Length: 325
Image (cartoon, rainbow, N blue to C red; front, side):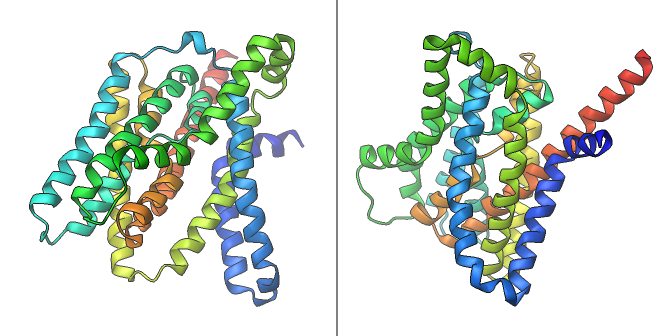
């Protein structure tokens, strides 16, 4: 029994991704499951934000807002997020007939996409600072809310609302699930300290396992989305490769910048782990639905890398424990 629990703990993310894939394949190929598809999809759409809210609340309970500070690596990562997006936008604006417009736009979406709220969960599990990561997550989402309505109209010249209107729309899209659990956790810490201590004591690993369960839903939905997409296989593979390059680039660059400030883990997760659901919404709202393949596959790449990081950390800990005894 203990061995089974240990295996489950060590392989939470790979198991979550595998179950998500198997669930998709079952509903896609087994006709007998067709009658319950709508109910299953509706349940998944309800559970995802609910799980995310509880997961972030449990994580933010471990964050003391008084310890949140903007540091040098936060500034450098935000500057990269803004500069990378702006450079690609300007290139596409002045050279609209380039042969690689679609891959460039896919790369742009993956780079400008803000940090996922759940990145703090993996950061804590890897031994990084959840407080510092939470600070950057808020900055990253604010930066995306500013830069997207400011420069995306230069690429897709549709009729858009005012900058302020788009800014508020984006904030309404990304902030409720980020800010509300943060404020709730802060309020619990300030006004009900005993209850706050109980939550921290008994829910220390809850967020991680909820994240693993959430992966089942998100990977299943991503596979369904990719299978149902009318985009040609060639375009899908191209955008998938672009998202892989973006994932490797951002994790490596984030770790390099973070390491200079003693925050290698936080830097990597901050720049590499993205809010891909938001990125998909951006492609539909500002660009073209075809591009949603890039952030759709990014979620797979980032979680493969997260799984490898956790496996590597566990191997190192087991080796150190053996040497100790």
